[in-house]
Image 1 (cartoon, rainbow, N blue to C red):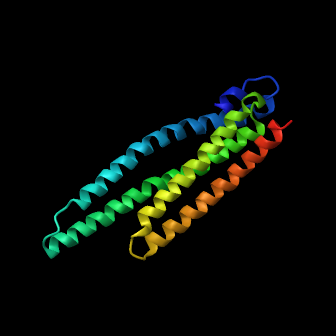
Image 2 (cartoon, rainbow, N blue to C red; image 1 turned 60 degrees about the vertical axis):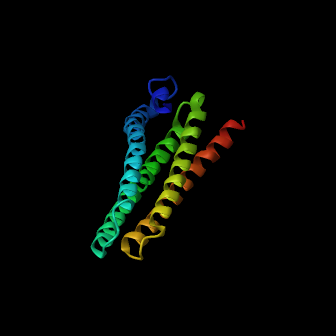
Image 3 (tube, rainbow, N blue to C red; image 1 turned 60 degrees about the horizontal axis):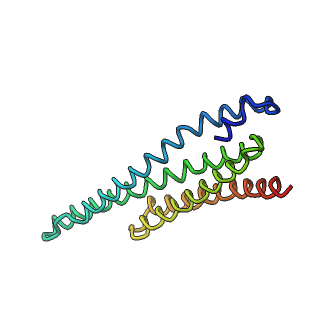
Length: 170
């Protein structure tokens, strides 16, 4: 929104191209996050379906456990992808916080807060979904990457907050 409120405005001619790019990149992000909610629900239902599989014989138990493992991976990958996109959202919010229309600066700050909360919530979901997984590369690498991505988002959003505090205190 701030990108759209910046390009074409008097006094922001020097950042017009950059703000157009920010606005173009932000639009599909909005769509992605909306779709991710539905994908997360679908992944949860898939996991519940796997948990409801029969488990009377050894073969059924094995098949059920394999279905649970696969469904858990699927349920982990949705918030993991949200974490990846949260980083992009934070970077775009930082760009508009630094160079965007000062009259809509608070919107850039809110976008930064949303990116931070989105990243932390996604991290929590990755961690809980992988918590009971057996030790292995998927579990350890996913958890480590998720923590690193969240830290990057929070670092970026701290810069946005600093800009809000500095500019709005004047």
